[in-house]
Amino acid sequence: MATDMTTYPTQDIGNVTATSVYEDRGYPLYGKVMAGTLIGLLYFAILIGNALTITSFCMDRQLRTVANYYILNLAATDLLVGLVSVPFYGIFTLLDYHWPFGPAVCKVYCVIDFLACAESSLAIFLISYDRLEIVRRGAEYAKYSTKKRAAILIPVTWFFAFLLYGPAIIGWDMWRGYSTIPPNYCRVEFATNLAYVVITSIIEFFVPFIMVVSCNALLYWHIRKRARAFASSQSREDGEAVKRDRKVLKNLSTLVTVFLFCWMPYTIATIVISLCEQCVNVDLYEFFIWLLWGNASMNAILYAYSNERFRSNYKKIILRVCCRRSMNKVSSGNSSVSAATDTTAAK
View 1: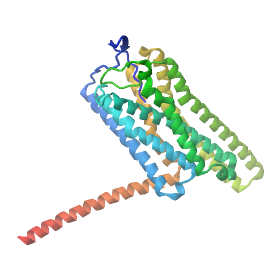
View 2: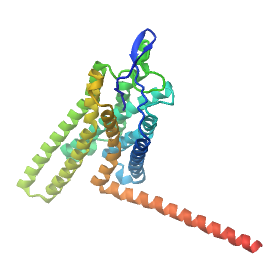
View 3: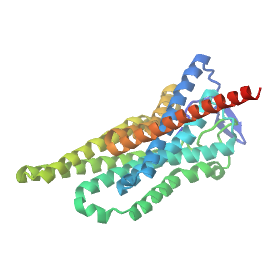
View 4: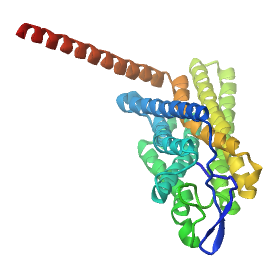
């Protein structure tokens, strides 16, 4: 979700003086090799981790619970980041911030990137709220939270995420009558519009974050309440329920903490940039962008850590892929030997 913030020499666009955002920063070759390696590692980490999560959900019926539909949604969102945001911006970065794909592709890229990032924060809120309902409603949860309800909520969040940025990315230059983005560069037109950046940052990050923290606080309160009830009843079933609830709280808290760690620096820096473009170091801001996308690679690890079923399926899928490759190599080797034998016999 990149909004460039560097101040560059001004240029005239129509009758309006606008700030050029392109500059050949001339990174040395070793820097590009190192950056390319890290970008490649992040790309494969996002793709492999989230593909494993989605495949596990599809192949294992026991994972197809309502709660895991929300995890599937987050995995799909993270996979979209890996398929679009990381490779396109990676090429852009390695070409010294030269965009080779044209302005139309730039708009499509920005729409997908901002959509995926906005949906990511909403998906984490859905997961948090669902976990709260599991603990709060107990046996009544299955009646309240259904697959039909999830099938409605998830598309609604995607639609809202699109409305937050999509129309502005597509039409900002049309409404204004000119573009401030020079050729061979890519960013959103509203990058330095303080009002819009602040409003969207509040809606995209701060509101979901406050709601997620509230869900965690309520979840903690319900678990404490159940623990006190267990202390008085000494019921074995209540004790198991409390242990399970505490594990849910721990896993959810880890997910939210990682989300905060990856998102907060970028969000604050973006708001500061809209006030003062020179107040944030360029390379530091680039790091914050990649840190934000790095969150997409961490969620799959958190699922494996917190859910034994997911972890088991990850191992099965990896072993199946490795065994299939080994069998293909053996089969290819046998075919080569057979062909060589037939040739010798023919002679």
